[in-house]
Length: 438
Image 1 (cartoon, rainbow, N blue to C red):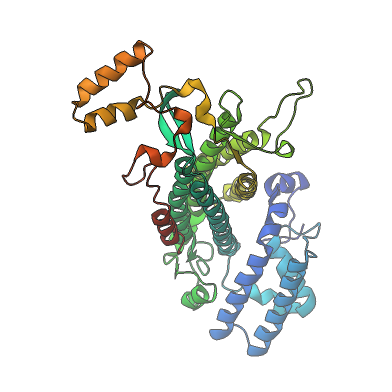
Image 2 (image 1 turned 90 degrees about the horizontal axis):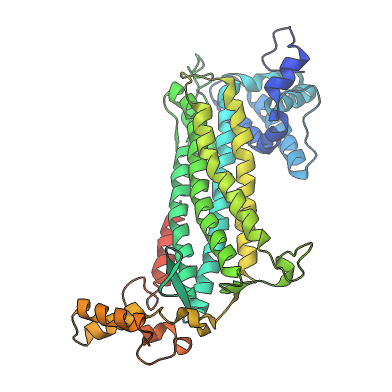
């Protein structure tokens, strides 16, 4: 196998297979970013005199051709090539001879991998943010559409107080605002330039790291060359934490949907083609999409801990275990994309039951409303609470003489910020605009 570090001896095939693992497959996701990093690097090399102008022109044109092959899906790692960096350099050397070997001047594979991963993660975070925003807008639209439809609220899995579909959908929309803040924080950690730190100790070439920082659109360099290498693992962990925050929101929403689709609740339903059946029970309409989403989000939640454990107990500097970060994080990013896309897709077909409160199960849903009504009329709260409690125990309770099934959210006169009568969706949308502005 062709390796950048080869000094004339070859590792035994079994060792190579064990140490390389899935890296060649995962590296293909970094191909375009390796080209981007190389283009910035050679422009900098020309500016400090390590490349001639005509060499820069030829190398840039060759890299552009490689980028085009990546975009078309024609690019691949040859069987005897170790990684993406080796493949790009090999193609350049085949086309341009010794000139192709000059692109590695002032670089180590350590900072080359780091810049590729940071460019990749930066794009991933931006894509996930945009997918979250789509889901956010869908939830807000549903919140407005169903803001008058009451829904039983539960605590301790017991019927508690009146909620609404507007409040429920709106709650998950607002939860996504915090998740986007987390994504933005991870983006800030990722968006720093390690290029030029080499193997972690810099080198004697007069590299212009500010130039490559600007060319690649990073907010700043990782200034200290050791600190740049210390960001390996930490950047991935921050991304894992951010997508874990999104996954936790989706996980809870998926759990809500599984419960709410149960006929014992019957709050929501979906078309038959979005549910699955049973091999033996012809009546079944299983919430498999939401169950699988719940499980996939649990897997995403485990990633931060796995990265933390992988990166523990290592002194500073590069260690080969870092290669395994891609094995952990890259599949989790794919799961995140899948879950966000499917959640938004399913919500476009959700059916809300606007007659939930027809069931006598919810006759005591309005006890707190009645206590508050009597308190506002002048009865001390503790006395009103006692009165209603006695009526419930004796089977005499009725909320203000109104049938529960006839009530709308606005009938309950909840006016404070964030209540069923004051959802604040416009304010939440402004919060999201601010959170997503990175």
